[in-house]
Amino acid sequence: LMDPPARQDVDVGPRRCPKAASEPRDTIEHPQATRRARVAVCGAGWWTQERHLPHLSRNPLAEIVAIVEPNPTPRSAIVALQTTAELSVQYGAPIFSSIEELLASETSASVDGVLVCTSHHAHAHIGTASLRAGKHVLMEKPM
Image 1: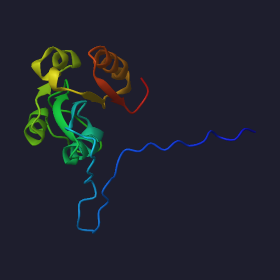
Image 2 (image 1 turned 30 degrees about the vertical axis):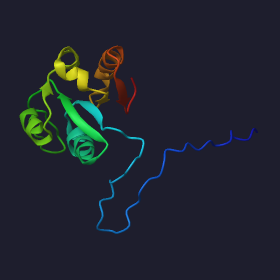
Image 3 (image 1 turned 90 degrees about the vertical axis):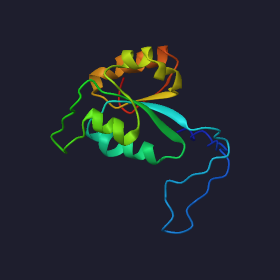
Image 4 (image 1 turned 180 degrees about the vertical axis):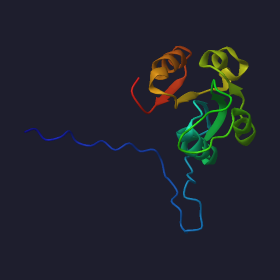
């Protein structure tokens, strides 16, 4: 058996840890960050509405600049979901019905990366279109 390769730690600068239980846990000061990452979120299903959008909106290093969802009234068997109009108001982001519509819009120039939170069958199409447009892509499941 071979020994695993040596771990190489990467220095990302000092981080501030909460000092008191009352201090927000998601507060991070990163000296190398000059501006917030501008993220387009594709998909507005239950996982996006329950996890991704709330967490991104609280992250001081991120900004939601667009939401892409073809269905104006997303559905879930698990929880009641907000409409895309309600999401737009809550997060201050325009709604687009397709990745093509987003990438052809003026908003596209302000998008740094795309978070793909759709059904698996749509991952390759959205990811490929976003990469071809020069965007960073975060996709949690298979492409």
